[in-house]
Image (tube, rainbow, N blue to C red; front, side, top):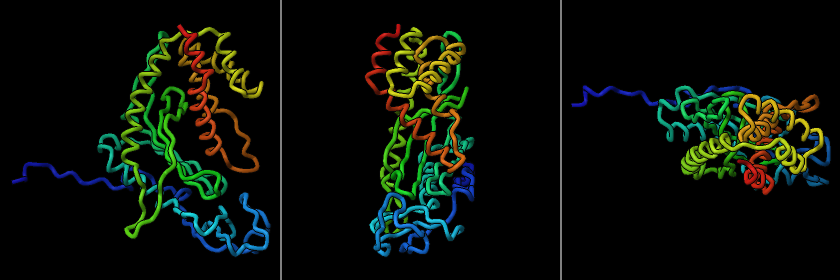
Length: 304
């Protein structure tokens, strides 16, 4: 008899993740027509007089909007398939108590040519202590679908600082998506989540080490100057580091926080095109590269 065991209703994607119409719009993949585009070069593809050989990703709710131009070999994965597929996998991987308070943040750029959905997990955190301050870092998963050819569909994982919402990307891979007769597939996702959580645990220990490692202002200034950024950005990073150091102390964690604050919060001019989400993720991926650079290794060696 199983009467004494409580019945737990299985979670559905719609119970946890919001259905944002700005994200879940319908697209089609159909032959390109000159009268649709009215130009000979589109999306980096020179069409010449062979428009019939190319296909366009079109928004069904915006009939005159072409989101990208591709050859017929392109795998068109609509946002509905991509994000619902990821969310189904998240439901399979995580426990219900880990999903109950998930925070979802959406960013749509270039009329939908690029869509980013971020899943933050407040139940999966680590507290980072310095001699002046304590804050928590939270696990996050970022899914990025793109129709204009500027990027492959990608899945990233990393952390976000709960104190100032600075984002850090620690893992980044191309999503292996496709179609089977049974429908959408997302190969290797569950294995990547295991890897992502392990990396989050390792990164939290690394960040705690940064928080305990003292640095000199002159060394930090030289590090920023050696990143190959503009003088304006170098000065901006130095100013942000001083602000971070007042809160967190003169340590490597404050250097990381200055980088991630700049990538997550700097002012972006989007008067011509709405590209903030794409730009911020690009900036955060660049920070991840800087934290693997020789310049960062040297700064860590100098830290006490």
